[in-house]
Image 1 (cartoon, helix red, strand yellow):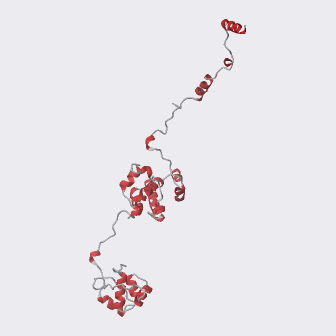
Image 2: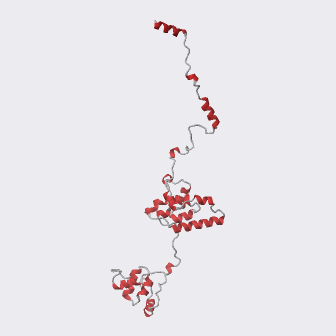
Image 3: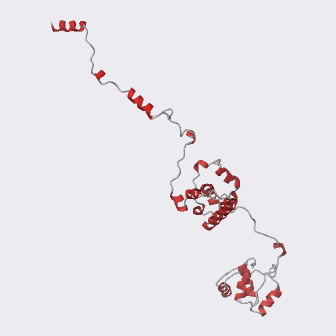
Length: 260
């Protein structure tokens, strides 16, 4: 049932200008009966100016007359033709300014740990756009080197029930398409508690990216036999270290002259 505009102010006007019961006013305005009684006693809505529902085209005088004669009659809000066909706007979830900087981390977490979710589902959960999700999937985001995956539930961007419902829909869709996750893929997924307590992934500096397989020792395809032969070839004969050079006759003559 639709409620009138400025419900509390409307209740103040009905208390002051009609003989309706507290329960009738409470049901029409969407308030509690004790709250309406507090308005009548002056304990609630002190200083609030009454809002006339008749003058503002929300209620007919004939409807009030019927309710005053029959305590069981319930007031009905007057139909407003301008509100016909008005629906809630559909679009991405609104995210407060204080939490918008956390959306890339939440997107990276969803892409990493729930690959079955589509871009539209992630957009509804986090309140972002599909181009942003695509840049994080392709790791072309301008700040991808500094983004750490964080659970969107822990960041307060969505509820756990909403995330579970989205995952169930994604799994049902993939099962219908014949592309459901295998057991090995499910084992790779971790829980929220594990992902929050895990260490950050090591990152390779951009300046040396692509050199992680570079080795200074040359080709690593040499066999163990070749290395063994190199070690044996470098062994030095122990006897050659103790063989002294033969002395010539000139050296012996010099020694004799010195002794004389």
